[in-house]
Amino acid sequence: MRLLKIIHRQIFKELVQLFLLIGSCLLGLILVGRMLQLRELLLSQNLGVLDILRLFVYLSPFFMLLLTPIACMLSVFLTFLRMAADRELTALKASGVSLYQLLPAPLLFCGACTLFSLYVSLYGVSWGMEQFKVSLMEFARTKTKLSLQAGVFNQEFPGLTIYAQQVDLDSGDIRFVFVQDKTSKGLTTTVVAPEGSVTTDPAKEQIKVMFKNGRIFRREGEKLDVLHFGSYTVRLPLGNMLRKMGFERISPKELSFERLLEFDRDSELMSKVFDLDRARKVKVEIQKRLALPLACLVLGLFSVPIACVFRALKQQHGLVLALGVFLVYYSMLSVAESMGESRVVPPVIGIWLPNILFALAGGVFFRQAVRERVPGPVLWAARKLQRRRPA
Image (cartoon, rainbow, N blue to C red; front, side, top):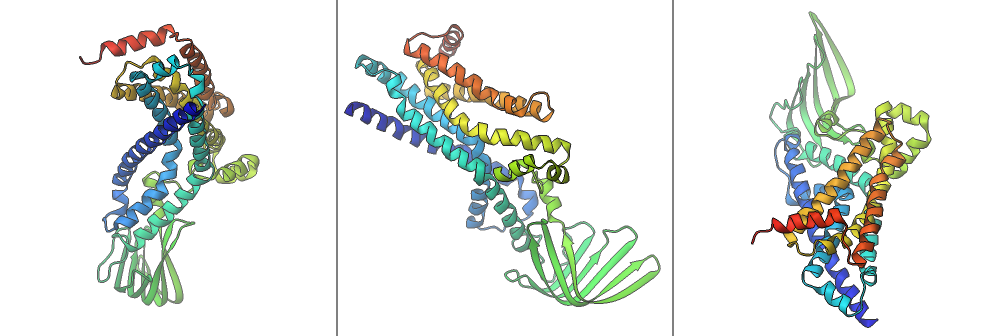
């Protein structure tokens, strides 16, 4: 009994170490790629290291929802593949320890990954995306070329020319401001004011330039109107630029689970916010938010017998094999997602089908692995991979 506790502790420790290593590497690669894609939005990179890390933290939950099942599966697969290749499993079997008795450690680990992924799915995704957009707009106002630079005619937004003689980026206060608006065809609006301020409106995804105690000159053809005002606001649509980079104002993938359920229950509210295609995506996203966390448990346990079968493989080849298995799972999930959005199959059936099939296959393979029997197709694949190994 004491021996089993030591074995479980060592297996669990190795699983956690591999999960942290694999998860951090995959997440880092994806985040770096995403930041390179955002260079067009940020225009000039004046962000500090802490600012970039802050954006990384906010983006992480969105990607961790998908990466957690991959990292969980690879951790279990590589751990048991190493144990099988080092003949540790053979030695344990000779000592009377069956494969069933080794299950508590991977079960506990996969259960912890499932709970973590479920928390990210229900709360983390929406929190991260909301904070990411707010921070991105704030950085755009204060730390990139989208901010108003003193003594420079800023023309970052098509049709708008903004000039300020004095700019305080910390407070957003500006003095001696000139704005020319040519966004309306045949109409030129010029605003001149002694003072104003720059603020962001995260809810509407806008940068607002507010003027005080100035004049508006409107010219349409030969007609010129002059207006005096106490307060006047020009709204810069930063949200349009965000959407060009793939961030929508209201996307089912970025909503909290509670908000998704609210839309699903209230068809009238759904029709006001989403069109028919996105309404289908809401129903699919609800099932996906539940199915992906459970995939940690399903794919993790599926990896145990597969690692025992392919025990002669090197770890780098085993890594490729495990990624191929996940690619099959994700392809099935993507097809089911598309079919659910097009109403070919109900989302509750299509999204859960990959988990059901892999759970059934894992049960069959596990039973065969305990009996030290290998299904014909798996044995054929194992022999093919072993023959291709370099000498």
